Amino acid sequence: MIPEIIIDDFNYDLPDEKIAKYPLANRDSSKLLKYENSAVSSHSFTDLPSFLPQGSFMVFNDTKVVPARLHFQRSTGAHIEIFCLEPVMPEEYVTMFEVTDRCRWKCIVGNVKRWKNDTLSLYNPLGDNAIKDMDLRADLVERQGEASVVEFSWNNGAPFSKVLELCGSVPIPPYLNRDTEDIDLERYQTLYARFRGSVAAPTAGLHFTENVLGNIREKGITINNVCLHVGAGTFLPVKSSHVSEHAMHREPFVVTLEFLKGLLARKGKTIAVGTTSVRTLESLYYVGVGCIETGKPCDVDQWAPYSRDYEYSTEDALCALTAYMEAEGLKELQLGTRIIIVPGFRFRIVDVLVTNFHQPKSTLLLLISAFVGDDWKTIYDYALANDFRFLSYGDSSVLFRRCE
Figure 1: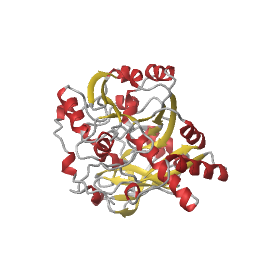
Figure 2 (figure 1 turned 90 degrees about the vertical axis):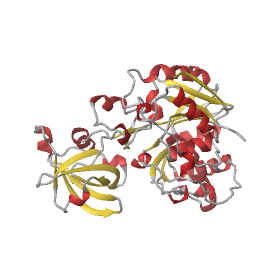
Figure 3 (figure 1 turned 120 degrees about the vertical axis):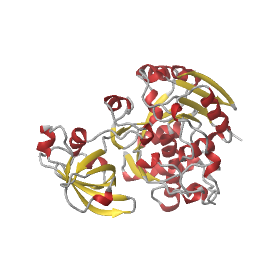
Figure 4 (figure 1 turned 120 degrees about the horizontal axis):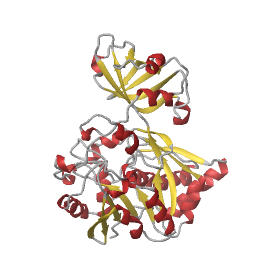
């Protein structure tokens, strides 16, 4: 049954001065809030390895943010901003970034009402010759509700990854209320980012340095990766009064057979770095259920966890998924998830969560509440009272799941 949750119950007062507008000079110099057994305390992020149980299975999201915001201009002089969300043609990210002449993306278009189906040219106010030679153009293919399908075309034979690097800007969160700056090119990206595709950073990972990662490994904790490409929906607050009316965007993820075998063989706690890692890990159970019941995996529906009682164990589901991949000769699996994690959710994999502090009335705050119960209010009151910095460039927390 879909939970009846009123979003106003997950609101709190977040003064603008509490929002970190810029990253600190050093990634790991942020503060760290620890929550365990209903106790809250304040530390430094460099203390994190000392709090993590030995022998744990720690999961990071190694997606890479792409410079997905592009500024175009009509022949009339009107400016049109295009924010690339997900590839349409070709659909696969790896293939998309390799194409050399044209491609289509699902996009959010600013001032779309002013776009009269004419071809747009990239805005190039400084007259950059490399941009001029590329001659990047945009054509509106169709509108799909709040989004649009846009076809990009260019001349110099460069792969689309190079087109974005040259012409695009990093899409920092709108609540920073500033333009992208040089510092964002480095710091709105994790050190371990590998696979291009996100339009928002998995910000829990922004604090990690080689020193912190080394100290984690020294404790006998294995470091593992999944890849979920973060969509623009991560910025969207819940606008409807009831959470049941909120639609989650599909986000693609990739897991390897080797990762699944490691997850099955783990003996200690499972630690997720960021809410995107949580959503990927918890989605795997329902993917495995699909393998048990239909013989093959499929995308995870938003309300699948709440639709019925599931009699299968976590091991049953993961074994079924692993067996399917082995039978099909697959080394990795690419799927999508719309899963929403709200109070009442049954966590089957994640025990510990490393995460930042999230916006009021957001799906991310709902996930935190599902993880720690009503103690989320205590945690956030403590963070506000003790000068923690909030949101993407803010401070961090390590939360041990509350078990009833």
